[in-house]
Amino acid sequence: MSFEIPIGPQHPIHVEPLMLRLTVEGELIVDVDVDVSYIHKGIEKALETRPYIQGLYLVERICGICNAAHSLCYCLNIEQLLGKEAPPRAKYLRIIVEELSRIHSHLLWLGHYFHTLGFETLFMYFWRDRERVMDMLELITGNRVITSYNTIGGVRRDLAPEAEQNLRRALDYIEERMRYYEKVIDSEPTILARTQGVGILKPEDAVKMGAVGPHLRASRIKHDIRLDDPYSGHDEVPFNVVTWDTCDCYARIKVRVREVYECVNMIRYALDHIPSGDYRLKIPSFFKTPPGESLARVEAPRGELVHYSISDGGEKPYRYRVRTPTLANLLSVTEMLRSRGDYEVYIADVPAILGGIDPCICCSARIVITDEARRRRMTMTLDDIIRLSRERRVEKR
Amino acid sequence: MGIAEKLVRKCRARSPWILLFDTGACNACDLEIAACLTPRYDVERFGVLARGSPRHADILVVTGPVTRQARDRLIRIYEQMPEPKYVVAAGTCATSGGVYWGCYNTYPSLDSIIPVHAYVSGCPVKPEAILKAISILVEKIERGEV
Image 1 (cartoon, chains in turn red, cyan):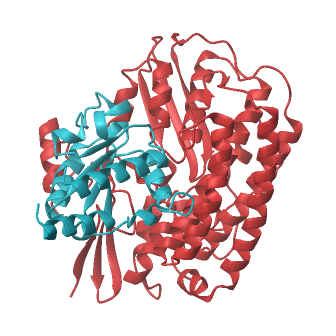
Image 2 (cartoon, helix red, strand yellow):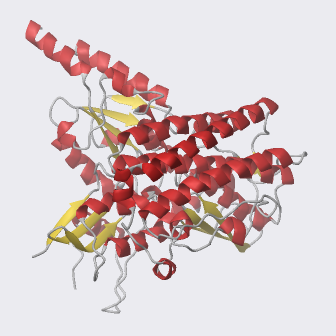
Image 3 (tube, each protein chain N blue to C red):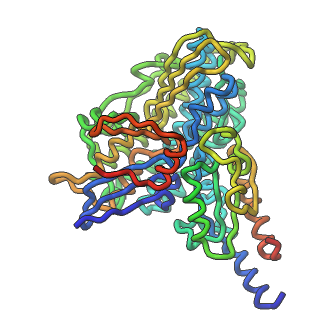
């Protein structure tokens, strides 16, 4: 006897509208269906109707958390189309802001993860320390969340000398706090009981399911775009790629905690070795790009982010495509949530497993129609699609 | 206004519980609202608690432009809330569409779908702005103006 439990689109375990349909037998989860279409806005289409410089503001708002990565990826793409490269100082400044936003994202995730596990005190602690990072982002870029720092041909403003001193003090504080939290995580029996051996994703499955980012590195695979394909002076800044062997939710916590140390060290190195010179190229507000296509990859806090654009020689992109890390990771969630053989998943593990990939649904809203069994091509009007999506009566074969 | 009603209003203004619903936001506004609940801003000192169920909530805080897919869910959540209920449109997107203006899958504003009692501007909203909006709304609830 199996039941279907819907979770979402509005549910306490996750702020964003995500729909999980769990099929359960008793306490065991046997099947799962994920729907992320609630916040599909049509950003890719909107990008085709706006000039490049206006597109930058829209791209940043694909995701509020990894906006620095999105805008960097967009800028790299357009610079590639124009055949230009940002000056060396701009590259270092981009690294500083990118790594700061990675610290902010990881602290946010850690806090939120312990909140979903029911550990409210640690949630409050992490978010209190995150405010220190937000202050630094505000000091350097002028805004707390949506930084608008990267621009086509460089960055928007230079680093002030007093900001550098403040930043170093904040980094010391964050590092000290993280050492304390790591001790708490390793010695707290409830955290260990809820995460160790839960949501196991074997390395070969992780590769097969196309997982990316810290989620993949927690499955023992050493993969990082900053190392494999350095895009913004990352070949000059030394850092370690953090991996963990246990492949469970505990590994995902550890990888992110250890990555915060790496980010701190990278920012320190960048501050020590930042070259002098211009921080942006002079590029007019409205410009045309030569026809062609370009692809850029960035290691966002959640994993590999890919932007692809085609230009037809106009002042707007002909086509723009975004592949976000959460979309890649969601596939492996369905795999982890399904019980099979002696691997058992219970309803109580859902928040721990779903939270483990750092889901960021706002990036991932997609509509994908596949009909492999019938091998039939369907033509639908917009109204048909809207009606179908509202009724949610996808026929089961 | 009778003394009983005055008392009820006063009590109501002391515990405005909020429900956050994301109708298509980019997460930035959600983050800032969540930051309000944490130690630096600590909205709980005004009696505000974030709830998971619409049936417990007094104030619905909506972030993001309303997408076609989320519209029906938004209306259903609004209908599930007990009277009296108030709606805060947090962020430029909920107020007027913001940067997503003209996207094929979004509605131009929140107040074309459900009645709104307070607008907070900003992209994303600052936690201070949310605190101010909630305190003004609470004052108005106490005086019986909304």
